Amino acid sequence: QKEVEQNSGPLSVPEGAIASLNCTYSDRGSQSFFWYRQYSGKSPELIMFIYSNGDKEDGRFTAQLNKASQYVSLLIRDSQPSDSATYLCAVNMWKDSSYKLIFGSGTRLLVRP
Amino acid sequence: EAQVTQNPRYLITVTGKKLTVTCSQNMNHEYMSWYRQDPGLGLRQIYYSMNVEVTDKGDVPEGYKVSRKEKRNFPLILESPSPNQTSLYFCASSFGGLNTGELFFGEGSRLTVL
Image 1 (cartoon, rainbow over the protein chains, first blue to last red):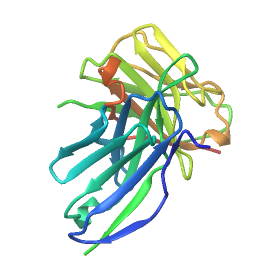
Image 2 (image 1 turned 90 degrees about the vertical axis):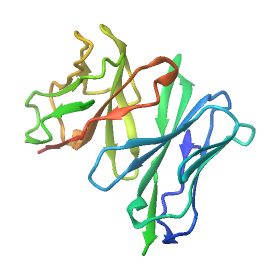
Image 3 (image 1 turned 180 degrees about the vertical axis):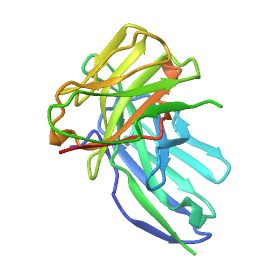
Image 4 (image 1 turned 30 degrees about the horizontal axis):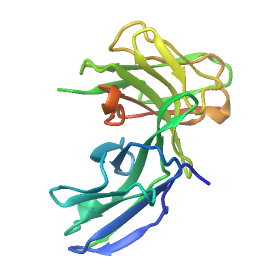
């Protein structure tokens, strides 16, 4: 089982729809969770982080965390073509005697005009 | 402007020829890290540094060296590059501690080893 797992996609949604991106993780003790956006040929940029169970909203983005199910998701409301990118989930987990930030391999999102 | 600067951005080299990729940040960040990104494998951590003179291995450290003599700089050294080190490399930094995962990334260095 991968430590951080994401569906590679592509996830295709029409403009204006809600895009739902999902991520599962293996370490039950993980405490902090991050979503990065990476445009093709560019570096990742942090768009959301969440540390507590529940929802966290920032503009059109909502991060949802369910530690019992070891599941974190990112919702993008009113999706725009400019949201087309790869979204990386990252989890801070205890590994090899220290905390390490482990990235999933990313979900490619395509927003159709 | 707050940034992480990597050089070179693109490099083609030959097997065995030592090279260094520099990384510098101007945000007074404690934590710095190097990642490589390969298709289908995502971002994998090579080395990281919690503070000056403190470095530790990530998931894929073989064939790489790092040093952290100053807070702002964290160079990645390939002593004897091999073709399997052809990859896209990212340097990243953060304040560390509870904020370790809030990373700022450099623009990336695309390395080809022939």
